[in-house]
Image (cartoon, rainbow, N blue to C red; front, side, top):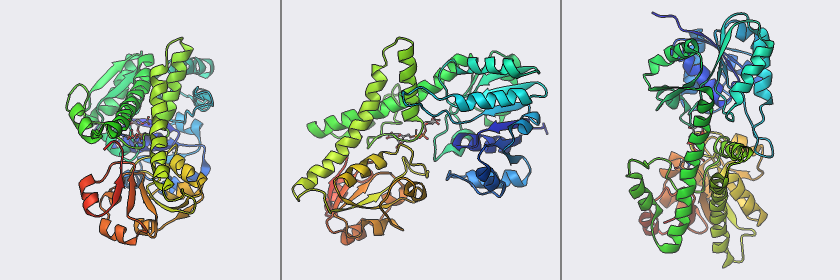
Length: 433
Ligand code: UGA
């Protein structure tokens, strides 16, 4: 059997850890590096810092079979590897510009440690023209031969392992035939279409993919608000529109909008780059605005409903779902946080439950946390669905109705059938229906 490659993955967050682990599972020898010593110490004992379905099993298996190692030492990992993947965070600055300091520092360290031909692969999401700059940094410090490539990731949190193993496409941006051949060979077991591009286009493919997905969501949410005013049904509209193959059915789910660390930050970055290049960024600014409008619209709907009962002060509001989407423990920029803060500012009393995200939420939101969904619903004046976890879809609605003070549900993710809710005796509000 052909031997796998020696790979270093620098940055062990969602992207790096998933990428490194999956590459190990494809038969390569991988060292995942991070500067967080506690995280690396934990990973060495198979303690996984994030919840991501399927990841723990793969980390255990590949660690046991000695294809996967963890380290805090960039230089050592670089020396032992032929391919070095950059997966460090590229957070936004206040003005939307991407903070490249971490990726630049790491690049410098890799260059200094390099002891032979290396392929440096940029996986972090960065503005177009970043790889060109990193290449300049490499040249300044490196003494050996090297090539660079841009290989964006398209992993969704909550299904990252599946997405890695079943990609729609793999984008490899590089001017080097040798680097292209190495990466194409590494990805061969995935049997996916590979697009060979220049490095700048590869960077833009990633940013635009996220921006266009965010745009689809905001478009459907804008029309959801129109549906409410015109007595149409957004689920039906989305279905009909999505049947057009040119539009497609995905990312047309109306709700309280997108959150997470990727869409908001990548959209801001694209807006920043467009402006910097003297172009109109209004299209994507509107996408961002609508994403806030829909949250506010939902929160307003709740407070207006309580106006006839003297406002939200002292009312008990149960929250189901804190994570920005199901199957993750991530609450970064989650719509739930904004909505809860709005209700808290009106002095409502909040009781919340999420299957995975409560530990993270405790760090930023003070409120009552419940052990299960039924205790979150108990004695509530209203119950809010903010993340579409499967267990909320499956919950015993009769039991819920019986335990609430009032059978009032605001569903921010449109997970129930309206007729059924009515028949069960709920006063039920959702989005765009
Ligand atoms: C997103 C992209 O989908 C990935 O391809 C990309 O690799 C990743 O960002 C990244 O740049 O790292 P992610 O943010 O993990 O992935 O999750 P998504 O499934 O895309 O969901 C994003 C948000 O959109 C969630 O808050 C979700 O609730 C919301 N959403 C999604 C909707 O409101 N409606 C939809 O129809 C789909």
